[in-house]
Image 1 (spheres, rainbow, N blue to C red):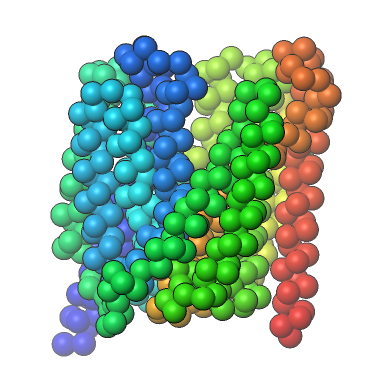
Image 2 (tube, one colour; image 1 turned 180 degrees about the vertical axis):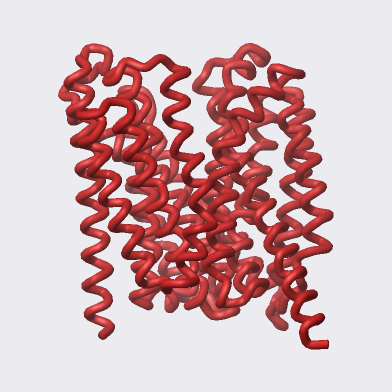
Length: 467
């Protein structure tokens, strides 16, 4: 009797985790699937690229602005209920994208899709904590990290095939049917959970949600970059984001049921984990924004060859996610966080040095070392924070993890590009020679390695203070 119950519970856990992984896959594909469609959209809607790029930016901005709100709604109204609502919204918005009669309608539909994607990013980690139990939490985080990497890598190639076959609308149609299938599966597989007995719409911190959304949109616009001459506008957005953050803290202090429970962020381990998560995401973004310039202008690869080299990172990430989770379960979160950071540091140093010695082979070897380190950190850090969080805070903490990662990616796209540009010493990269590009590339990744070393030191000092 006991053995049968154990087997049934294990099967239910696997089904629930599969549903959560599928949701993460959909949200990740949603980020990247439109990238390859931008030239086609520009032709169909006769629009310039600075307008068409909002098909991507609308999704990212909506996701970033609402990911914490989505997690907190799960704490209040039940994680399963909000998770299913997120899947339904994602599928509906994908259908609206498929049928969009104009570029403006497509951008609006993508913003709605981003809100659904925020819920799919925010809640799976929190639900996994209650589905698989603490002893397999690392493995669950590894599975979710793997699916995120697969989704990011799959989006452009899947969209390219579908667009070539039947046009850009088919890409969003596939997302629609995939979202409906995921909704049906999740309704069956994801177990019910407890919700706050006193929760109602009146308890939703709407002022805090509005201020936080405005802060995150302002920060996102500040980090997006832009054409020369808009530096003042971006600085103004950054100042607005900082001022809005101060207002948000005051609003949360005075709200009976706050969107973000500030007391949780006073815990040194929680605050440190979120901060280092942002830092690591910032650094990892350099491989995507700086790498292509070095591969093409520094090593002389064509676009196809550079794309193949860049695909090594997502491929290794997908392969190393589940092993990283199992290592976390075996060795413990604190140890694996530090191992992951040390391996990330070593990979960044190798990336700054080895391509100058071994060319493309050195670049690939460095990625093979760097990417598993990132996955080790991600699995262990996510596991540690989710195990530490109280049951009524898990949705919020899961949302904050997603938020810190997204903010890190946006910050990395801006800051790491600025470091690379400063290393070039010229305003136009086309004027720089291969050696200059290579030197700037090395400077960028040595700076990234120094940042990771600093984060590791902070973690060690934090441990000493707690002892």
